[in-house]
Amino acid sequence: MQCHEFERQLQFWLDDCAQCDQVATDLPAELVEHSRSCRGCSALAADYRTLFGALGQLKEVDLLATIPAGVAERATVTPASRDALAVHGAVAVRRQQADRSPAFGIAIAALVLVACSWLFTPSPHQSSSPVAVAEQADATDLPPQDAALIAAISQAWRSNRGETWVARTTGGLSNLNLVSATMSAATQWLQTRSTPWEQLLQASGNAAARTDGLVASQGSSVLASQEPTPDDFADHGLSLLEWEQPSLGTMLTLAGWQSMALPTEMLDGNLFEKPQWLLQVADGISPMANTMAGTITALLRALPQDEDPPATDDRGARSVPLDIRYDRAICLG
Amino acid sequence: MSEERHLVERCLAGEQLAMVELVDRFRGPVFGLALRMLGHRHDAEDVCQETFFRAFRSLHTWDSARGFLPWLLAIVGNRCRTRLSQRQRSPQWVELAEEPTQRAGEQDDGGLLEEVTLGLQQLRPEYREAFLLLHQYNLSYPEIAQRLDKPVGTIKTWIHRARRDLLEHLRRRQVVEGSTDAMS
Image (tube, rainbow over all chains, first blue to last red; front, top):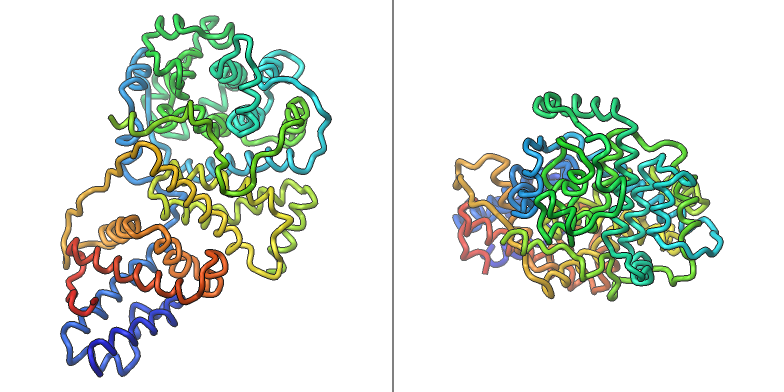
């Protein structure tokens, strides 16, 4: 057998056997015979064994349950967000690797439910803006009883339909208004559930967070009382960037939370881009309740239904408005 | 297959627990392919989310005579390609790949896996997708060809080149010590 024939047959064999677990070990006899007499072909076969051995191991890796060490911190910390978090001194940050996988899965499931409720539930036409919905949720008619409500608002804003809604909500309403209204609802919701939240902190094993506690400043919450202004941000030492592109950490800081035991990437990430993180925060406190579906349905019925549904193909549809898209290149810079 | 079909039928009937169950069952491979394709966890999370949205929107179009996972993975692939093309039009973020600290003969499994992962990221996207669908998700050549809308021969060529390029990467990084003569 010539070397090129060995290579050709090896490729055929790889094609045939690539889906079984024998690739890394059992070469056909004739290939073994040739490889014994040819150093180059022997090395080639050995390299493929190494490669396929690694591929077999890669199959076993649960990507959902792993976070590359240090990557998240290096890639997401920005000077602006670091300054924001430093405003209130000690901010306990801890990566919650073990908790991330189920939380993320639940978050996706919740968001899918939002979409499905929209898909499968006929809703009457109404013309409330998402801001109005959020403000309504902040009031008494539709209390924020469920984390899915927050996720639904965030997701609605984030979707193509939300982009349209935002464009329609002129008259002084900015993108941040919706976020602030959402966070206001979220903050109030969080504040009513201090005990489970403390349990979460304890479960995280973060000693610093346990010591400092999660202190909500009484009566000083900017978001719970009124819409924030650039001056509010400046008063807290926050930059214009944070005003335009608030992170979850910034919003929680403004809302009066002194210390958060959350992954860095969650605190620093753009809230516009990562509504699921908001749900993760809430979800860590209380698992989704059975009332979620009803809450979502009520919310969606309050949203306008006269828009075309988001495109379902892959040609040009985008889920995040480009003008508020968080730019990681800037972050890294 | 019948179990998948039943689950999808329950979803189409509006049973929300079935929707959660479907997400829970498939989010692993969906996220895995997205992460391997994009090499960035946040983007993969987004793509994972978008994939399930789109899948549920188009659930009624799924052909139950074919596997659900290949159908779902095709959506992931589409979303990943869209995301990759968006990256090309926007400022690039820097992948903070670490230099290998170990060399051939002394690398542990973690180092080898990291190098293979890095090598996968450097493959051409179409090679990478076909390669992953075959070697990580056990799709057959005809299934991959159907999902990527390419002839089987093209898929075989892509996968062959992916293997070759991946091996070449490992050699360049001195993770394996083969002869490059045999690769030509």
